[in-house]
Each structure stands twice: as structure tokens, then as C-alpha cells.
Length: 248
Image (tube, rainbow, N blue to C red; front, side, top):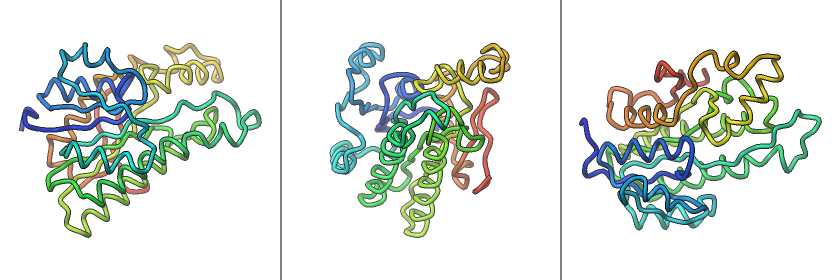
């Protein structure tokens, strides 16, 4: 289908950066979007002409996913929320700083994917998580971020396997976007890695940055294009989606 009229979507981590781009893409395609955010997202409601409903909640709390899924009954769920890690080399990290993404990004993915499988969503539903290109390439200035994002990918693959085994008919996918200053996490890390390599930001990026609208377009393609259903993980750069083999 070309449009998403009649589709009800939940976007977790929706108020800024890549999450906002995802919300705007879904709304533009005709979906009814519920944006889960801990902060004030009223400007998102205004920017979309009131076509987004905001749910103020801490997405990492165990009871929250089941409650929201039960109340909203979505057929598209996008998990984008996570913490911003500290910019520091390993020797300058504390365990509290190093583990922040495990206690946010991984916990949110775990709680929501578990709830999706337990409810479960209706057949034909799509669940998309945001991992990171750091899961493939490492991220030495961001503590446990790369490992946490690798775990988000693995959790999504586990959920896909369990859904297939139970014949639930739910499509799971995970996106691994290249680093971009347009995201909430990437902005200061692009500058930090460019400085670490003795390059300008432009040289480090090697071209125009990946934009929130690019991520939104990728999410739309995963929801619409059923030929991609057998693949779970996708690298995302300026040229679009590239399927990744399990463990690749």
C-alpha cells in the first residue's frame, strides 16, 4: 500500500531528532500517531496540525509498554528512545556513565519487545527498533553505547525468531543508521570523532549528513515493502537501506 490511512502507530522517543523525523513521515503517510515522550512534545502536535497524540510516560518502566499497547492497540511500533552517553575515552568513564545506554536503550527495547510478544499485536503489525551503525563499527568515545545498540539489534532478532516460532505474523526489523549530527546523540559525537581523527566535520562525514527525514523514509519502506519481511537488520546511510545478515 502506498499510504498508511487506517494505521495506528506508536513512536517511542518522538520529540526530537530521528524520532521526530519518523513521526513526521508516518503522519505524512496518513497514520494516526501516538508519540511517547518523557518531555514536552507540544510543539510536535502543533507542527503536525494536531495529527499526533502525545503520551507522557517513562518508556523504560516495566508496566508502561503493556498499558500503552493495550490502550492504543497499534499496528506499527517504532522504538527510538534512548540516553545520550558521555563523550569520554574509556579511562575517563565511570561505570555509571559507561552503562547508561544499557539501562535506557536496552531496557526500553527489552520491555517493549517483551510486551509486544506477550499481548501480542495483531497479525500484519510491524515493530521497528533503532540500533546504530556503532553496533557494527564500535564507538570508543561513548562508553557502552555500541554494545548496547548491538544488544538492541540482537533483542529484535530474538523477538523475530520467537514471533515466527509462535506464528504471530508480526514483522520485526531494526535499523542501524550511520552516525549523523542530525540525531540527538550524534551531534557532539560527530565533532568529537572528527577532532580525534584530525579532520573537519565535513571531511569526517564525507558528504551530506543522514537527515531525520531519511530515517523516516526508511521506516515507511519497512512498513510498506513486504518483500523485506524476511530480513531483520538493515544498515542505513545516504543511499538507503542495505540488508545485513544475522551476525554480519
